[in-house]
Image 1 (cartoon, rainbow, N blue to C red):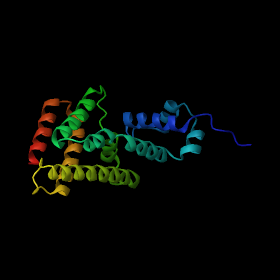
Image 2 (tube, rainbow, N blue to C red):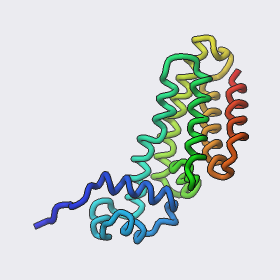
Image 3 (cartoon, one colour):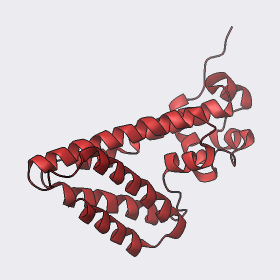
Image 4 (cartoon, helix red, strand yellow):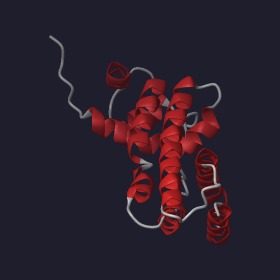
Length: 193
């Protein structure tokens, strides 16, 4: 007779997110996962497959929630630029408030595992596409409302904003210096005019 699972896989994935976020993919051993999840290897392998499979599940779950505050800010009515500034500075402040300065798990994972890891590449591409689409839609609305010039190419602006976002996340993790990050946000938003 098969034994029933005596743990919640969702809790295990949430814990795995934190482990991979703290140590990175390569820096996380299977023993780390055993210790932190409080499960034996057989349970981990039986439920999630390999370390890589668990990593992909953890990163997938992270990608479902991580961009939500920014996406929500882009959907709210009202002028785009102040909302976007607030959301970007909010991300900077959250990154800098973390004493471990872990940054963004997706950006960290992309920097560590790409281009070799196809699963991470697919998650990165899907999340980037979601953000780029949201940026583009927000820029188009701001153009219709007269906040941004109609001469601005919304597709190019969305790519620029995504690249700016990713650069902010890496720089916040690397330097911890708020002032140049805020200055970069302000410069990027002026560039949209």
